[in-house]
Image (cartoon, rainbow, N blue to C red; front, side, top):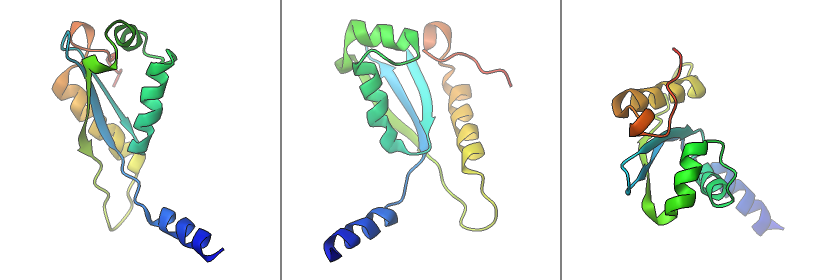
Length: 118
């Protein structure tokens, strides 16, 4: 039982990393920008594409056409959490994602994102 308890405690101590990632189609140069409050969710994101259940229809269609080999997934920014004072991680992650959307402009022929109304 001690071993199980140790594993649980060490799991709780693992820091959850939040951040922004891009998925770039090497065939046509289109980019998808998104973020997760836990970057381990990237596995679920890939699984949705593999099972043809992703809600971004354009990205899903190109994934179905070209396959996973045609895409590069890269974490482009990690959310840096403030050590002191109030920190709204969700809001800060949204700002970080917006920064990358503004910079890369992955809309229309350039990407898979839809412009957000500010």
